[in-house]
Length: 623
Picture 1: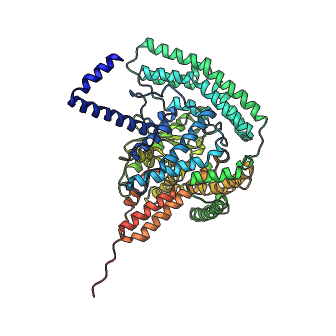
Picture 2 (picture 1 turned 180 degrees about the vertical axis):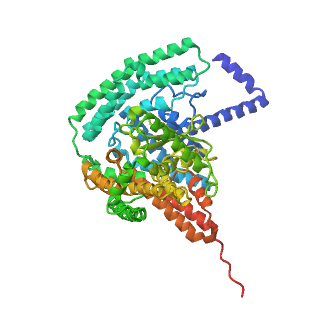
Picture 3 (picture 1 turned 120 degrees about the vertical axis):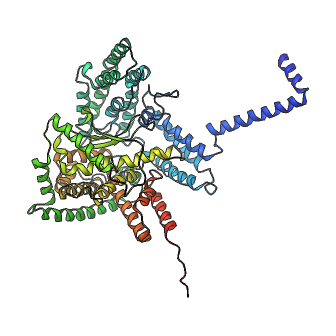
């Protein structure tokens, strides 16, 4: 204390040093205050708050960070040896963080923000407010399900997204294997809490998940996909000595045997007991406040306030309209005397449209999909100014999950450029990919559908990071469905059979409006939903069953496609009518894509503003 006193006294005696010390102290105080505001309080700059909200969202989700490809393998990689927490305590912690961020966002003066900031604020507020509205339903979903459940998505992350480029990233792969037991312990805790609240998945969900998990572990360790995929990754690492390679392989083998298999045994045991308490009621109407939960899910996915009844009636009208259009084409091709569904089922069995049910046939399907994608990618200059930086490739859905996976899905590219966008095709049955439906599926999942929209969203400059990744189902799926029609308008599906395939896929999205609301609002059974789809569509029954079972575990999601597409077509028509000869389709697509995903209500306003800005000013004619 005496030494410090003498030091302070000596400094105090010099006027110049006194000023410097005062400035230093002020700087430290100001910096400390600024740092406190930035991390714990209200950041002075709303842009800093946007980033903090994004960090809050992703820093506690290691798997999301790997999926985004933001910082894996960098000096600030703190996460890629860990798995995301799905325990109740973590779920509730994140729900509270969302509430706090919503309150904080509303403290910023909206009027003083720039146009770009206002748009960011509106998008973020819609998202956070919607999440807060769903807080009563934190345990209403089914985290274990046959499509994208924790039990399949966690290993899928390691197989398809965890990058192994050196010894460190390989060690992190093994570390993630070692943490399956902790993650699944939190999962079981959440499932038990849901069970106590009366939220139990339908019986078929549990039966299919149990079959999937039993198959997943019913192989020797050295043949397990988590081991074989790791070995493939290791073999591609050039700067890795053989001793390290062998040690890492042995460690992975040991973790699969002592951690993965027992972890799945524990979950299987719990789900076997839960299955005894389940029933065949499939709609969420059976859950506590089930009707309110479904209304919330419908709003979340469509970003509209359409009621289940409105959506149902919309679907019935669209089904009738599209079937009439298909009927006309079928008549012109000489297919008469049967229903649209019967004729389409007939076409789906016609050998001229099918690939051999062999590995060679499956390889050809993937090759032909890539050719379709590459072809259209070369012919879009007339309708697009913007192109994503990332490429896209076609791959097979991992075999361990293809039995219950959808026919196809898209995986976003890594934001650091290390991984392209991927269009995954389900090849469990080659008959699910008749040639006349392949073009529309490729356009939807890849180019100019999901890959264009997601890739461009990630490329946006000078916006908060959340704007690059935030999801809105109606916007994203509506865009992908819109591009199916756009490709046809551009002449890429001039063949009448391919056009039938396009219309059949649009009909599927219209049928979804009817079936999803039928199951969850009108209390249809699974069998009634399957019968309606079989009668309306002409799809293979296995694919129809997969579709219906998807709607059961993802209520409301399937309604977003057609609602989003219809809104985009409505806005395009409005722009054409408002701008006349000044309408430019490329500029319209710029407006839709350049700001990333957003609720349809905000998108509509953005398009209206663009129309207004481009309508020629009225000038009084001279006398």
